[in-house]
Image (cartoon, rainbow, N blue to C red; front, top):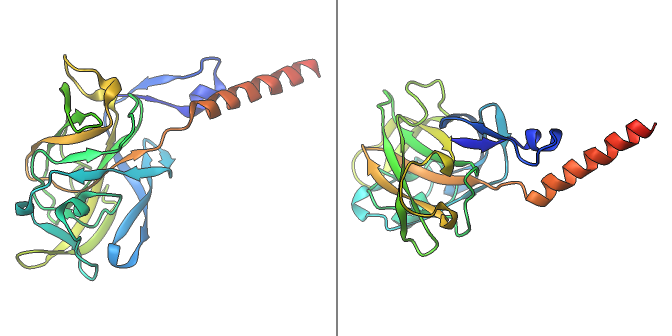
Length: 243
């Protein structure tokens, strides 16, 4: 994965500084309790960096057979699409079906940080998913895919939210629920055909029983602000030299 460091971009003479990385477990997150709607992610911490400007994808092409789930005491999501849309991390779809699409509606840069939340219960079992890339009309872009293995790791070390009781459409409640997450970028997707410059969303290509709750994106810092920060530092440096 290639991800740029904003600090590196401002404090070096190059405009953008890239760093090669693998997908990162989300090690911390903050949530807002929106009452009957559940817990909404307000920040994530990835590789020691906290990000607060987040947006959740809009889900489509979900399957009713997946079964909605939510936290006991909250209101059940109205539709399967609603269960996977936005940044609400305590509701989702059990064994989320292959083919579900997650649309952001605008271009995704290669170095933009994307993330996935998944719910599980104790004892936690490894769940692997594979994501592909879609364009603005929902069309699949080339053969680019990324496999995320055991989202968030095993055990409770990187559990972001829990322990909570999961309510569901059918069957008894599930105790010991928790939420885990992983972050990545388009640069880590592997493929040989297709143009990623048209990417505006993701789709679920393979799922080995993952119970997804949300797919999101860190809103990138505008390039104009990066340039402004760089020019400001150059002016400051010149002033110090003149003094």
